[in-house]
Length: 308
Image (cartoon, rainbow, N blue to C red; front, top):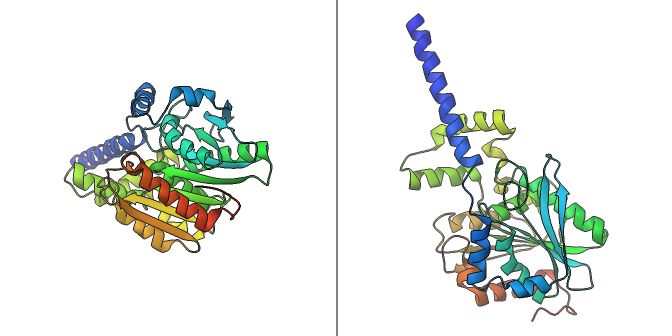
């Protein structure tokens, strides 16, 4: 009996350690250094320091409901209250959003760029792949409305985890923006995790999900089931543009196709980009801009607005 209890205790202890190990890999995914991202974007001329420095802007710290500050930059080169909010991907920071910001400034939008929790200059100890981040995005939206008034017109652009975050925000928190652009999101994080483990570790992963779910619930208060944009995308009434590279083998473009099929109401999808994950704009800037223009003209802007 004692031997059986010892074996059982050892098994449970090993399972507990495995659960902590797997969730640590998720929660504390290594990030790119801030200086590296800024230098990379500068060298690629997607960030031109002199141009960025010349823009009228205000850097602010916004208190998250979870006890840390979010670093945000409100950029307002235009006198009206038409804005874009940019939500970057995991391991990146707000410098990665500037290339998209520049595109929309050219279209007459003002902009808000910010760092997700645990990224850039924001606080927070863990990454949650949209669970906590969707409420942080609401904090940014609330501050924009506080500054510009209830009549502010704005869209949200997100890349990768940032795209999943905006879909979770719009589908389960509030559909407050006037439109959304989701660039290479995952449709369900559990499925994405299973796919990556099968590719990277050559092992089936779904048998680990009960362990991962129970450990995440205990440590962070959510499970993989809470990280599923496809379970809430049908709640989004505003227009959504879905973008994905057909060559993306990190998050498969099928996930975007599934999201598009599930979304009701106004929507558009473009998959015919070349490039690896989150490189649709970097590898196809002119085509990316044309896709954005078509979407804005069809679903978002009035005839008097000029996006040419």
